[in-house]
Length: 302
DNA sequence: AAGACGAAAGTGGTTGA
DNA sequence: TCAACAACTTTCGTCTT
Image 1: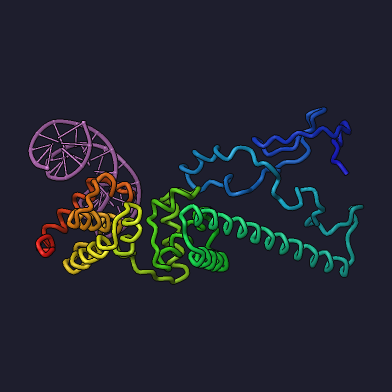
Image 2: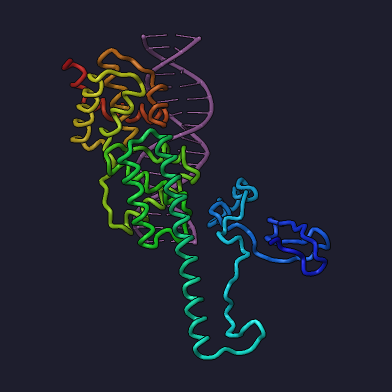
């Protein structure tokens, strides 16, 4: 059955998303307010997000499961004739209301989780991550949902943060940049959610070690295994000399790879290494001078 | 000519009063 | 809440290969 305008009977109804209203195309009667889709893109938690919210455009469908048309038990203890209810009837209505509310909350949680998991899957495959990382990310996300930690932050950001954490947990770290590249959330938000999740789930992951990044950098730059081992050796020396902590691990790893490649005659330009590590030549240079200054003897040991 | 170097100014996030 | 701060980036002129 199609909805019709109570004023003129027209069934030509127009949705005005800008104002969140359902309007009769015949006479302009406003039939319903607040039909706006409450999907994640519409929510904005700070000015930055409000500014770019327009990218979402109008929702393609009304994702409210009942499309706003199903019967809702209202809060008045009256029947449809406006008469009061008997105590038994009141108790029954009370139970119905309770269950209807529960069902809605449950369905919305399920829907959001399903969306988050598909996002995790999409990002993971874009980053070329193996199955166990995806499963770890899904596990972390579900735990975050169970701990009521999603409230007040976007699903996208929490899903990305879960993936970021899972990468570390599985020893295949991706930098925040890399995750942000394939995520719809901003790097800043992901970082925030990440810290929040770690604290909330009392999950403590040690900061990523530069050595974890070496295999990826090396393969992206098509460098041999010898270069990899040399880079790891350099990193071990650097770590002993306290040149690692407080620095961005990828940057340190990039410098080690650059030096190792040079030592073994598989030269790569700073530009190439910087690109693979998503950093700049300047950063690599400053890491290099720090490392070379104190491990120069490595150059003369073959 | 391309790559490496380093100075200087700018950026965004953290920390501690 | 704000200023100081450290790490990193951008930009640019100069030197090296």
